[in-house]
Length: 336
Image (tube, rainbow, N blue to C red; front, top):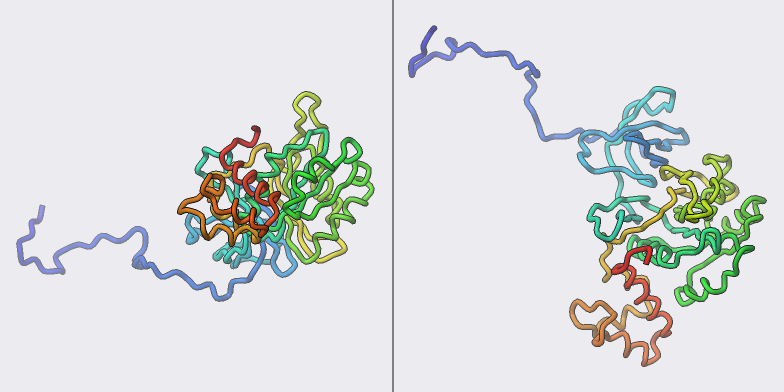
């Protein structure tokens, strides 16, 4: 074996070839100046269906994005094969800034938040008045998530032929939330879609609701062609329907400009990610009254300044009650 001394010439040292290539690693990433803008329509097992210049394109997330994930509603930049032809695949290289985010956790003890929809303007909360029975706590949680994420809430009450809407509407009357009440026949003959469509023009609206309330049936009536199977039967024992929508899907509206996003039926809506201090922003008539609240006030304690604010006539007491009821949902489980 040849041994080298302290003054070895460079020519005496044999250099092993780099099996991975001779190009040095760099932190400089391509700018992708030729990337084309698109919108994520649905996500399925790492493959994202995007709308690009009127074409439906299948894409995957570029490695350089790391753990950052794109969700339905995201505005993204794509490169690669954008023809939309079968067996082609583009790459998403940038995810645009989001104007709003609808998030939820599996339950209140789960720290892992799931982004359901991005860039929606409105959240349509669909609930049946009977069969299955309405769940006000679930509605409250959806409202909190909407207020926290920057979406305007909108109530759609179905199956009014089975129960009157008065009790539920009275519960949310102080929040001044727009609503539509429809019966089962209207869900299928198009009348419900026509009335709901009046609230959807020029907006991106995400639809959420418990399984069996008629959400996907309504969405199918709103879009140009049926993309989802109609909701299956409701279990007579549990009152729960089958999950016929398995992933969020964005669809262009029929007859008016705008988008609807159908989401899977929810059985829980965790709020672990929500900072209760942000919910007050959805109550502009009450928010100024918090200026005299003690530091870290939960707005439901003896020293809360909102009691005096309401007593002085600056806001309706029903509004304060609604705020505190919504804040309390953060401390209770959905089924309570």
